[in-house]
Length: 447
Image 1 (tube, rainbow, N blue to C red):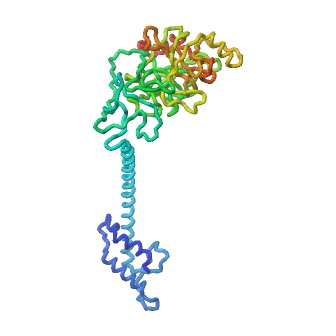
Image 2 (image 1 turned 180 degrees about the vertical axis):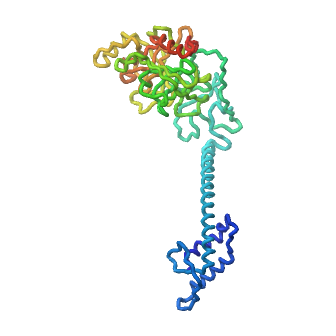
Image 3 (image 1 turned 60 degrees about the vertical axis):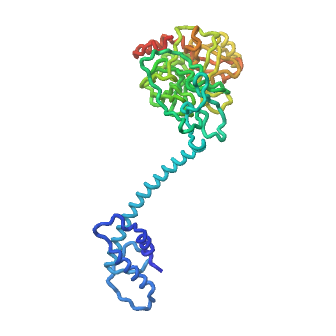
């Protein structure tokens, strides 16, 4: 039986690994083969045979063997061991690099397989990036919510032949374009939902709508009133630091990056809470968020107009938007922006309705609030705090003013239980004063 060092040595000699990175002190491999033959003879010679006792040297770290080798042979083996160790180190490094390269190819192969689900020479792309995708009368592609099932692409994508794909070009920002606040894109931008089972908004329909995020979690809605200014509810941001918050504009489906025009994120430079804001009294619930840099102009991002001081919206049909729950029974927030039609009610009527809803505990709304809704199933809900209640400008039905900010409510969507909103018209002078001190022009939010 061969000794343990030979079991290791022979494969290395055969594979050639031990010859890597040799130096001037090269090993005489012919001599090594002689050593192996000599050892075989020693291993097969009967123990009773007399053997000469050559000058010996113990080989370090050779355990579980009683083999003594000639001095020159031991030196050769020690040298060989050094070369083998060096070669194995190189092999390990190269092997790790090779494994990483294999992982890269495997990942790419996975992507190709997913694309091949569309069929030969077809890939999943955004619907607006496929020339063969049908469009409506406005030139918009059609979106349809559906269960994924065996569909290879999500509802914002389509299987497109590679010759029909279009390169995505970033939206140009026209700095010289006049600013028009409050313009609602009723039919959406570049795409239209053919059905809205849960009152979803069209993509880009409400370009002033923003999501206020803490890390990746939605904490509030808000409204753009100037390129670097967002208005929201003080309640939603009072307990957060500047570094914790980011503001996202131009988004529609918070769980997707496949919208026709990408969203933009901004960090926060300053938070301005109203000096008389009171959580306990539920009054003056308004805050301004000053961004570190303005949002660039693009079709899905634009400011909303502010109302005149003390402008009245009673009995007007308005709309609240947000990513909050659809109703009290929903388990999570909405991925796609929703729009809920609501009618603004006089505060006196709301006082009576809310008093009944609370079990005849007398409710008297603060003058800094208004209320809207009360129709079953139509309401802002949990997660919509800070979001806009927008009302159409008289004579310009597709332009809107910011009438309210979602503040509080009793449940959501309950019959004869309206929701309560910050009355933005009561704060127009305060907003103008704050922005004037920051040299932000009123032209952005003036109708």
